Structures are given as structure tokens and as C-alpha cells.
Image 1 (cartoon, rainbow, N blue to C red):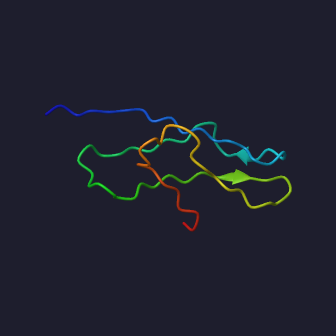
Image 2: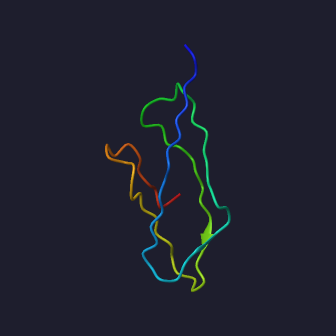
Image 3: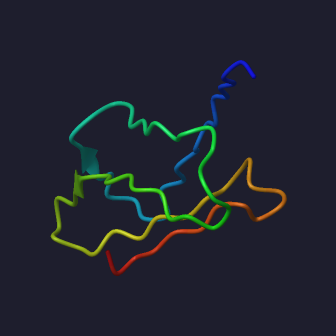
Length: 74
């Protein structure tokens, strides 16, 4: 079998007017082709709020089958 790859865009929607500042412009993660279903993937996104507010992330597009979820506690 030949390895396959796919690019999955994650769109971020800012709910608050104060724009957060992200450490990087793009965040990526490599996922093995033979990974078990329901295995958590690790992608750490770092952002800062000018007003020291807690930032909340959501998946706004591209998750029609709810294959991805966010864990706010890790």
C-alpha cells in the first residue's frame, strides 16, 4: 500500500472584538496513516489576548461528520 495524505483546513472564528495574537500564522500536525480510530491528536495552539481574557476555540467548518473535537482542558 502506498501512503496517503490529506490536508485538513481548520478555520478559526473570532467571537470577541479584541483580536488574539497567535504565535504562528499556521499550525500543522502529522498523523500516521495507520493510527487507530479515536486516538487523540496533539496540536497545541498558542495565542494571547490583549485584555488577558480566556480564549475559546471552535471548529467552524470542515467537520461535517464530527470527526474532530476540541479539548479545552489540555
